[in-house]
Every structure is written in C-alpha cells, then in structure tokens.
Length: 86
Image (tube, rainbow, N blue to C red):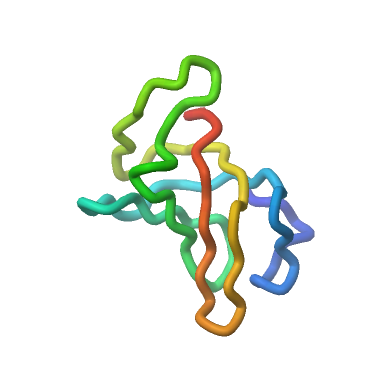
C-alpha cells in the first residue's frame, strides 16, 4: 500500500500523492498512516472528494489517496488533502 521509496518524513515532498489508511478520526480531522514515522492529518476543511466536491466523512480503516499540502519537519507534521477513497 505504501511507496517503497518513502521511509521517513525527509523523503516526502509537497504536492506528492500518497496512499494510506485512516487510523483515527477526530472533530478536526482524520489521521492517516502513510508509511512514515508520523501519521498525516486531513483537516475537515480538506475532506472533499475532488471528483464531485462533496464533503466526505472518513472512517477508521478506510484506504485513501491523498496529496501532501504541507510539511513541518521541525514538528513532524504532515498536512494532507483527500483525493479519493480507494
């Protein structure tokens, strides 16, 4: 499910497309395991499916495709935007 070339946050780039699995859902967003040491966050404002622009409620265990929209290496934060549910 994860890209073999991505082993750590240092391997990630803004704009890159990644796949992952939802590990936790909160009021402010969903945490996604993308195969690095920290989970990425899809904020509720970024939970829109691109093909129809409808807000989507992610559920634990769902596999998704997302785009990296921000990286903060000092705090190990990964911001994601939902592209599609696989």
